[in-house]
Image 1 (cartoon, rainbow, N blue to C red):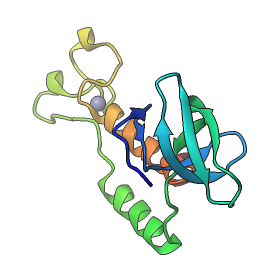
Image 2: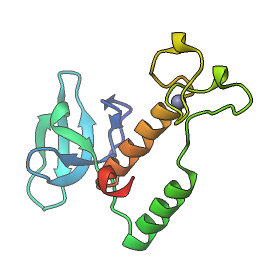
Image 3: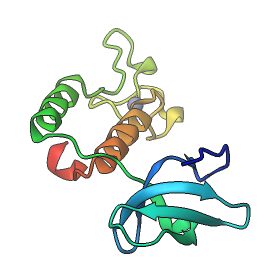
Image 4: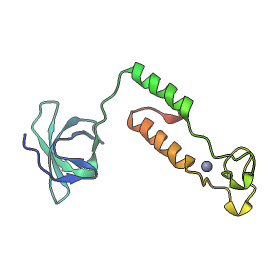
Length: 134
Ligand SMILES: [Zn+2]
């Protein structure tokens, strides 16, 4: 297989891909400028051309024991909103005790909501339901 430098939506030739609609798994051979991708499917059928946006990166599923260890690790290290006991003026508004500076509103200003969003996204990419875990 030739490995081209072309790419699309974060995927590039040579990547393992999954067809979003029918779930087929294959290897992207080429991403063409017009939005088509040429894919060789694992099921042995002839390679076909599909639209880039019908594809997503295929994430290899990991053994259950590794997933469970990751879940434990994330649970132990789940970030908490910044809370400054000595002066809550500097606490995040989403900390349980809140922020003394009302001008901060009620949105996270410490970066934890973004980190939690990324953790949730990672679980989804692993094929897990973050609501069951977090
Ligand atoms: Zn926060």
